[in-house]
Length: 404
Image (cartoon, rainbow, N blue to C red; front, side):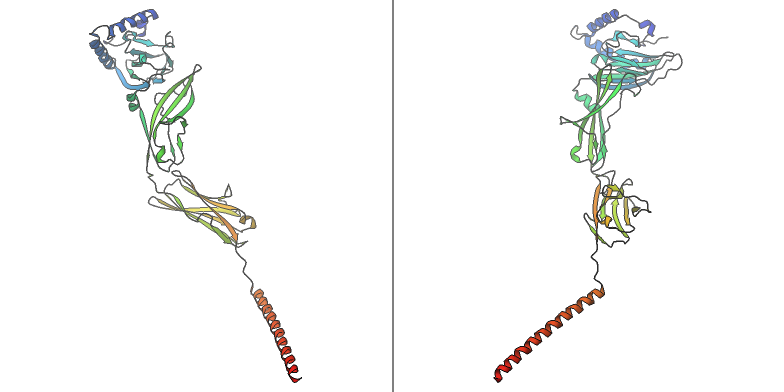
């Protein structure tokens, strides 16, 4: 038995295009407020009936959707059909109550209405006010229905922007990625509809922007719009979403390298074993400290001439890590390279400390010191002898002159 207000089976609502057009015009003339003063109560009655319709038809669920005029929207039926059953979609457009009809792939005017039936999805390619209203889907041999209430807003509606706003919170100096919502978009396996990517715009800026921030700053907070583009039948159709990025102070402490310092020089002896420790304090289990030689990673293989090993201890939220750079036998080639300790973090910008090696000044041997002292003493002795001889000659010459 058919309940009052329940749509008739598909066989009883198959009306041709002329009847549909004529009845739609008759109904619009009936509810047009410019025709009669009684149109307002009639319109109110129609809206009430539409609101009660799901309750009168064995409603399984009611999902409310809103879309901006001119954009794509997808209604995906949760009902599953098995065997020889068929999935039926029924439209209850508010502006054309007489067009309560079952939609099928054989409907002649579906393409003219920018409507597609793809599997369990009803796709409205470019929504307009005429698409606003209630939709239902059901399996042909089932009494329950799933209902959708679609509201279409003007392109620049403030109400739509307020109702359809997604929020994301990120923390300063941490990595932050904005994700474009997936509400009511075509499934990946939807035939003949392919995704053409996502573009991002920040409110107040004219050019496109990135949705990925390696180390987000407070100035990057604000309202972003992501636009999903889809290709169907050589035409591009869009869906847009507003995402609010809220930037808060970092919930982690500042991870940093404690030692060594930038451009430190370590004095070493050629041929000796040297260990240089890079110590850091961190606040995330995903932070890591390691060594680079020039631009290449230093290996952890302890059989190599140069390698590094690491250790970490954790107390509360603080992690202390030490990465030790080990030279088994320092060579002259090692002195020519720069070595970098890198702190790589998942919540802030990575930091670097670069150091170098230099050979110690060689100490002077004891024998060499004795030889130098003896040489100096010999030179001083010779100088003294020469000076004494000169003094003696001067005195002798003076004595002889006196006797004469």
